[in-house]
Image 1 (cartoon, rainbow, N blue to C red):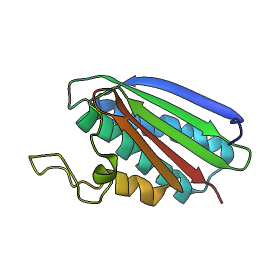
Image 2: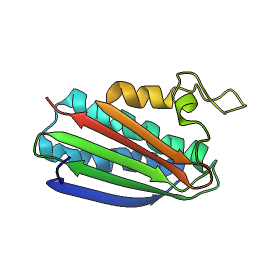
Image 3: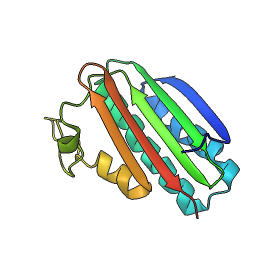
Image 4: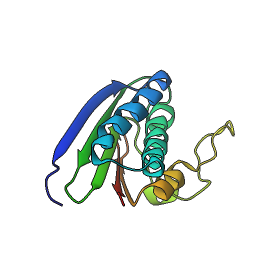
Length: 142
């Protein structure tokens, strides 16, 4: 992939009150490529899911840092990378299955990765136990 024509890098505390700010900042930055309302809503929903996963699963409410990198490309493609240095995922393939959750309370549906995948053009997840997880999503704008 070519180098982005513009890039945003953010580092934000993994607090639930910051989820909306992450959505808004990524959406505002992506607005440079003039996405339609539906495309922008898709990006915001996918970012929300990824950030929430960091807060709830990676750091389990203990706090930490979420790193977000957004790239804008000449071909009207957007990449969003969200990573953490949390607990990591032992089996990414299993975790990406719809309805899979490690939440014992029954509050979580296990649909986070499925939601991200449904709103974005491509999704890649890599993780190492004890070192964290990296979610990279791409959206090709019309």
